[in-house]
Image 1 (spheres, rainbow, N blue to C red):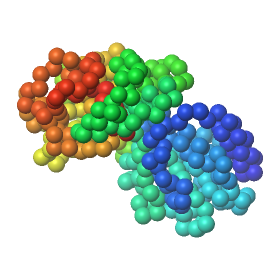
Image 2: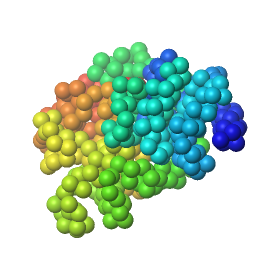
Image 3: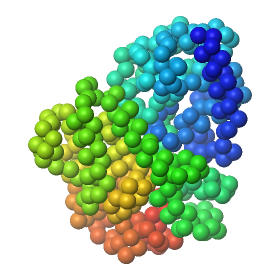
Image 4: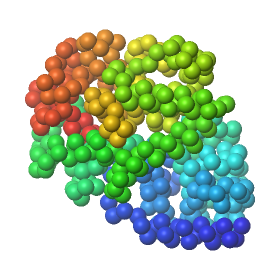
Length: 384
C-alpha cells in the first residue's frame, strides 16, 4: 500500500506540472472548495480532471484514477484510509465507477472521516442513480458540459468575451465579437472544438478514441446484462444516427432486425443518452422516454464531422447541446412549423436562407449579425 501511495504522489507532481495555462471559463461556476463530498460528472474529454487537479494544486490532496490497473487491484476504502492516515486532508478519485463496490466505500469513507474531503468524478450521472449507498444527501453533484463557443475563443485567443443573453441581445457586448473573425472561429469550433482536448492536436482521432472507450467501457456498466449483440446494437444506433438525414429511429424495426426486446433496447438508448453519446429530445407534452416524435442527435456535434456523417444535423445537434445547459429543450410537435421549443420560444434552425416558418426566431448559420428575428447561430455559443 505504501508503494501505491508513493506512485500516486509522483503522479500528482507530474499532473500538476502540466496543467494548461488557459482553463475553461465554466470552472468558475463550480463552487466546491468548502464541500466535503463532491461528484463531478460530464462527458469524457470536457475537462473534469483538469478542473479537479487545478483545484488541489495548492492543497494537501491526492488525486488518482480508479481505472488504473494498480489502483483497481486494491480495496478502495483501505487505500483512501491509508492516504488519510498519511496526513492528507482530501482525495480526488477519477473514474469512480471502475472501483469495486464504489458506492458502499464512498458512503463509509464519508461517514468515517468527517474531517476529510472526498471529491470524485465520472463520465455519467446514471451511475449515481444506480449506486447502492445513499450518496445523494452526502455528495453534491456538478456537471461540466461541452465547451461553449465563448470558452473556445478564450482558449484560442486569451480574450474573455462577454456572456450574451440570447433572448435579450446586448449590442455593446456583440461588438466585442465583431473585432475578430468570429465566423471562421465558429466553424472551427463546431467541427473540431467542442471539447478542450482540441489543444492537444489530432482532435478527430482523440474523439473517436473517446467514443470507443465510452461504448466498450462506460455503457456496459449501465446495462444490467450485456453481450456482444448489445454492443453491436450500440454501434448500429451510432452508425444510423451519424448518416441519417432525419434523426429518428424505428424501434419495432430495430427489435426485429437485432432480435432484441423493447425493454432492453430502451435500456441501451438510455445508457447512450446518459453517457453523453446521444441526446434524446421529446416533445413538450410527451412524458415517455423515447416515443414517436422524439428526435435523437449525437450529443457532440463535432462527431458528425469527425466520422464524415450527415453534416446537415450539426446545426441542430449544436443547438440542442448548447441550450440544454440553461433551458428545457423540446423538439417540435409539428416540424413543418419550427424545430425546437426553448424557454417556451419556437426556434427554427438552418442555413443563411432558412425561412422563419411559424417560429419566433430562426437561428441561421453563416450570418454575422442579428437582424430582427434572424439570429446568427454562433451567438447561441455565447450563453455560458
